[in-house]
Amino acid sequence: MKRWRLLPALALAALAVVGRACSGDATTLVPSRALGPPSWQHPLGFGEGGIDLLAAVGSGILGSLALAVFASAVGLVVGVLLGAFAGYRGGLAERALGRSLDTVQALPSFFVALALLTAVREPNRLHLALVFSATAWAPYARLAMAQTRVLRGAAFVEAARALGRSETSTVLVHVLPQLAPLATVQLGASAAAVVLGETGLSFLGFVALSGAPSLGRLLEQGVTTMLVAPHVLVAAAGAVLFTNAALLLATGGAGARAQ
Amino acid sequence: MSALRLAVRATTSTALTVVTLGTLVFLAGRALPSDPAALLLGEQASPAERAAVMHALRLDQPLHVQYAHFLGGLARLDFGDSLRKPGVSALSRALGALGPTAALALTAVAISTVLGVLLGLLVQGPWLGRGRAWLSAGIDVFAAVPLIAFAPLATYVLCLRLRWVPLPGDPEARLIGLLFASALLALPLGLQLSRFTRALLAGSERAQYLQVARSKGASETRTLLLHALPPMSGPLTVIVATQFGALLGGAAVLEKLFERRGLGTLLIEAYGARDLPVLEASVVLSGVLFAVVQGLGTLLQAALDPRVRA
Image (cartoon, rainbow over all chains, first blue to last red; front, side, top):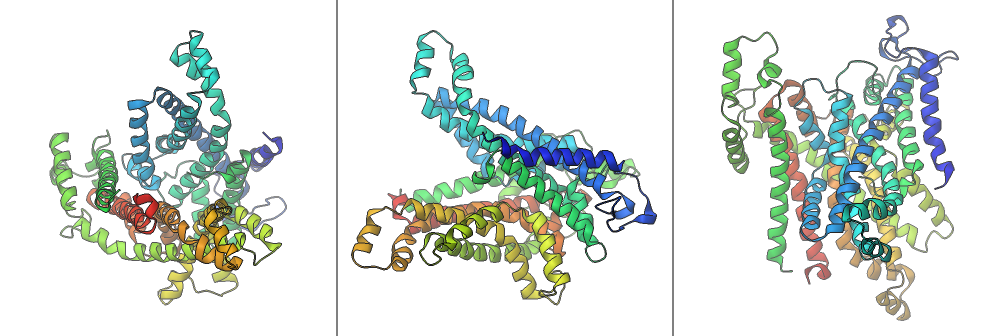
């Protein structure tokens, strides 16, 4: 894997950490400087209530990245394991997984997330992470199943079985490493989709307001103050664009079909 | 397979999607520990008021009875009356809001299909010469741009700075506003569609029927438009139908951005007020819309592409 691909994502994370550290707390309200324009000390200016935009964008990016990585990681582990075992077993397991994948992938994930969020009074980051993990596993399972079906007849698998390895052990030790490249590409696309999904949900107002604002809420602020303070919109939209691009680039996922 | 079997299959998958989505909303609203009456009425409500709400929502009955009632209602598309506006059925509120959303989504589909096919053809065809590589690279870059970040920026630049287009939320804007919003929504989807078109066309480059056409003297343009493009109509229809899900989500974002009243805003309102019947009705209706388009896409593909029917 080309190392330079990771550069934007790492640079993004570093910038976010630095920005957050230098500018202090993203939740301090200083109404007197609300919606102030950018200056040398505060490169991104101020948002509603006087929050420092650099700190806010920094925490927003870190929060979204953490959520995306968590949900994608859970999706990857669950999806690949399910797909690999079903693909290896074949028969009923494979058909059952295929049908459930059809159903899960046929549901618009936006509405699934919405439906699940209605259960909670004040959704927070953890609820969002669980909700996104619920649909994140599907592409991995499909990939793993298709690839395992191909690998089932490979010589090295046959050799492993002949040498006495159990089915489980064969899949874990011999088949899974072969799935790694495909799963990695999907990881970037998956993570980008989670970031966008989370931004969309908080933009629409489905996430609680406690703590530092997320990218979606910053974007919403930007939209409402478009006329008087365009720098808020530019900062928030730029953050979302850059995060999305960095995640897609990190694993070459731009070529892969996003979720 | 025959048309009848296809129709049955499409209907079954539509029904399955709708029931699954409906069940999810049902469970989320009821089976989990949070108290729906408290969510709806707030902490200050008296026990009598809470009991009344619980009875109205049938929450005092066992879960399987509630679910049976829900499924029965689902079959008739009856979700009860809205809790915020008693006397108005939840379904009628959802249907009323469906109009603007459907208009936005369908216009966006039309624009994105034209854009996608056109760009795909331009990249594969001989008309642009050296520029094809640039166009292709540009499409790859811009296809990954997310709508939620792009739409507000585009609105700011085009509506507020350059004043080329009126703000779509403006009641005076009507058709131009709808076209602008649809164009914004169509852009990322059209670009993705163009990548598929390009891949499909490139895949059939060496096909025999194209060689025959060329050897009979057809120009490259004629070969592409009359011989290469029509067999693509089947797969393209399926892809457009699949993108519809993204459209519904994007429509909600755009409705919030431009303050158009539609299904998205109704959903947010119902969510905030914990108006369970309206919430159920909106989610199920969106699911129905989504699944129907998918089903229609499959049927249309079968109609256009005899290879699928065989």
